Length: 235
Image 1 (cartoon, one colour):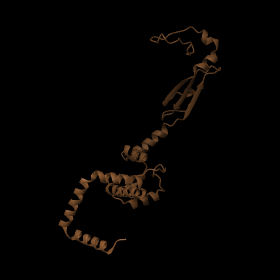
Image 2: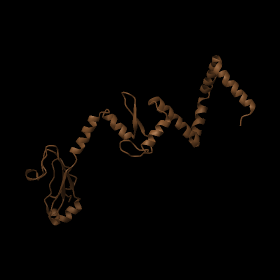
Image 3: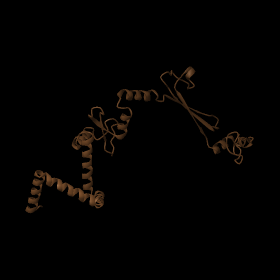
Image 4: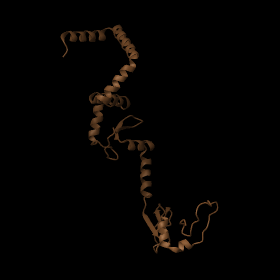
């Protein structure tokens, strides 16, 4: 609690600060000179207090957010929190909640604030230059190229050394996958992935036939490596 003398000095200083421009400028110059002379000491004390005092840290973060929101978007921290409450604390597009502070989405032409978005959704709108027609075409593209049929072919007889997986993506010109298109060929894109079975399984499947296969070397192969049998397993 301040004493009467401290209250009197504070009132006198406030009055002179408001009425005397020369006094105000002298005090500002004195403060600037002191901060320059004691910059390292002051910064060290502030960093220590920021790391150890949760209340001071929260106060500094709130002040920084308040200044940033007012300078960049022209809104106060209270308006940001009110908009966040209207969105139930989630992104306005993906409806997901995040521990990070949501980005303020605004129109770059008018500066009007449109809502709060997560970083991914906000960056996505920026990549499309905030053009709704491009975003709709992107959505149509994803829906059109969504996989419609997946064919899995495996060799029979227990010797399945190679497994082929054909994933057919039907394009806009694809018809029904019957008749000529029953084998999975159409105007869409066909992707084939081959996965080789491990050599021990191949050796067990072929048995002695694999071991009796004549050795063969590929052109440019390392002669120090052992030759491969017909099944591709190292002998």
